Image 1 (cartoon, rainbow, N blue to C red):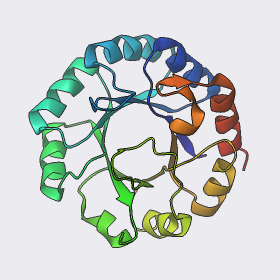
Image 2 (image 1 turned 45 degrees about the vertical axis):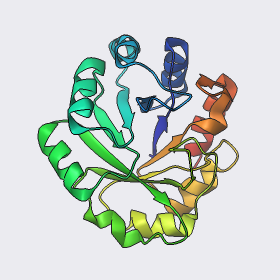
Image 3 (image 1 turned 90 degrees about the horizontal axis):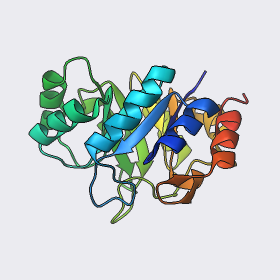
Image 4 (image 1 turned 30 degrees about the vertical axis):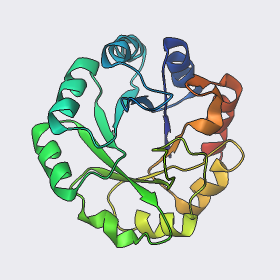
Length: 211
């Protein structure tokens, strides 16, 4: 069964609602320019609370952050996985993987017109995510990527996360066509940036698992 990650969690109510809806992972955005940014110590309070009540996995999102900063934020927040959503190099990923023993590393790659699926095989990480390219936004774009490219990439990597404009309206088709390990959604499940719409979160989970 496909795993479900709800990204952009900023408050305990949304975290609990996501868990109750059936999410396997919750994403906490530590990229300061993001409208969904959360301080690591605030994330820790939420994570500690929901982890006492469930087996949900907390994922920290970082964009081109210095290694030392990522390591410290992981320590403070208590996330169990790191999602790199910037232009982090292969060498950076290797060094972080070595430093964060036991922490899952997910590398997000943004799909533009020149994207080659083989690029994904270069990164020494646990999973690859494909998301839509945007000139200024890193995630939460609401734009759908080419699922043919997603399928080609999924066949090359050990674990594949599909992101990019996923919603209750299109996630069932996306899962059927791409068959990812996990789907990731954010902006299409919101009332406003950082505030989730419970009805859409529940509908998304139902649709993702309808197959």
